[in-house]
Image: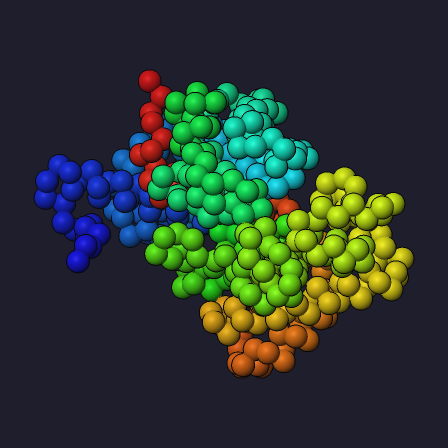
Length: 424
Ligand SMILES: [Zn+2]
């Protein structure tokens, strides 16, 4: 059985380095969660002695992770200067690539967004190699937008819709992108040439869940389920404070639960998947009434404005029709809500979460689907009134996976501040 070395076991130089690294992380987490404080308060709050705190703070200042702030007088004794997270040096980039768009944010170490970009791109036409080139271009543009230098970018995390081998940095399979075995991390490293930047890739639903956990209205909920609503549908599952990845890292592919119309073909090649009933293309098909049912949204629906433009434009058109009380649109959205409730109740019965957060187009369509989701869940969740599960619609919008990608990078640095090198 493997165990994490206890902090009291510092006998050899290697152990001392480990202890120091863990304590640097403890201090950073405390500052990040609790805000600026004096060294004395930090010592009280972390249980470390004052001399240790002073030594650790000096190292964190040298690494550009914290700075001394205002002088704070607390009670008797010499006033001390507060220590706070340095927002001026380290930058973290979070990007999201989806079927028809690319989005990104660049943040400081507190998660404050310094610049954001979003552009429509037809990924199916571009293919993985050219798409990765556009991802690199977007990252470089974000750095310029906020007046930073590439050397300040410590982490870059990319969100992708599909099965991710995180350790290898590879998209194993993206059913709606039709990509397989794309070596994302090495490709981006080569394109960017930013030698000091840690590049990583993760699944969009997992990163959306991390964004909600870090900064959404239910931040800190240790049993949180996030459902990403795009062309594909997936779940990011935080259970007892940990993200659930499964044996191969592919957990959460709930969009392929067979609870849709069994005659409808999914992007994955199977039939009757949940995302063919509630994914964005299914919503477009239902509202347009084309009955194309090909799950790929390729029907041209002659003269139908819903087929034009990117997903955001199509979503706006659906909302305009719903606002105008178009009967077919309202009926289609109510049915989307009902089918969303069917699948969500399976997940609620399985995981008993505190909160299920609906993201992407589900959040944009909240007004028209909420009641149907709620009714369906009430009738299907066995715990009923006893189960604590709340239903929420994301306030982070379509930016959630990109924000989560930035937060994943920030978390990496806060947990191991030694990853940020002392400038020399
Ligand atoms: Zn499928």
